[in-house]
Image (tube, rainbow, N blue to C red; front, side):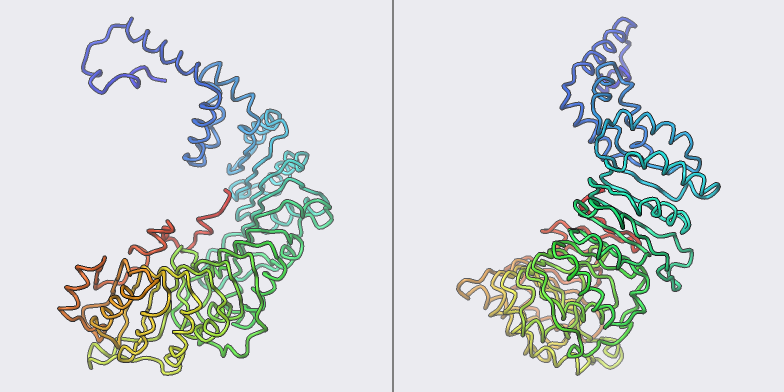
Length: 513
């Protein structure tokens, strides 16, 4: 540690004798050597958590060379040496280093990461060297991640795992090889990985599984005690609505303990990619009593059909991979009204088909009549959401305000109400709803009202008197931009789910690593 780091900022301008510098350095080293063990652990693991890949890889060595006390602490802490990351193009030095680390780990649970970098050259040789190092310690693996390695390397690695057990393994993440033309029609590889197929104890502790770009059926039927499952299948995009519904139902029926499910087709989805299927043709509904978190990044028609076939009494909101609330179509209103399948929902975003494009030239709005018919079920659907705190209407035509009335008699805990590019109503009608909820016994008053619409077009008509009343009555804002990523929402402000602008990220809220 540099002695000047312990001095005030003004110290650099004051002449300091060599004796003073030596004294400060001695005191600093003395303070470091007297750090209690629990404080040492807190410092080290805080640095580990906040560092980048290189920092984490070098941190154990750096900390163990600070002073004799820290070295003793480091060598006595097996978990300090239990993270092995193979990210080097030439992994020989890392392998030699990790041989020593494994001795120092002394049976601590191991976290192992194998990246794609070692496999650009002598890939098979490097893969065999890595597996020779880590396989004798498989009984201590806690997490194992293979990240975008070539297909032949994936096959080599997982072939070595077919006939062994990993009784301590809690987290398994398998990412397929990177596709250069990822947005131009990639497909899930036919390479089938079957780790631990003959291992007796491998199924007992695995709690979290991520599979990207590989067939998933084996994993679902082998590891039936999973609690977190993240699945990215490129083929989801082209599989068709009914097949995707069957796939998701099969996953949920196979994994009764699941509480988190992320489904992703890993490509941009054009709006209205395919029309909604008739929900009467869907497979028989199923229920999953334990699922709490459901992310679905699929075409909207598929997402609506999947949700229409499920009863999920513990799910609190629906998200996309970018941590933005997933829009569900008005086609979902009839099953919501009939079955009340999501009684624990706290936030809902309903998306219609109201369009303002004609309004720019003719001052009229257009909407899909078949979609609008589902609004007759809006009141029944909202009646089944007693815990709802945030409701967003996205491109919904309220047809003279007649579909707004039920907002004054449903969802007693509603606090946030948002209208995005909606039409067919006036601000005065919305004000009437706000006032009605305040007067209704047992109902919470609205806390925040947001209206997002462009300045031109046939959207919600703004009345000056209603506008002033709302400004004085609650948090009220009207904006002429639509930005789902950056605007404040109930989920971002209250639930602390911050949106991500990255399309290609996987599970930014993963429960482990």
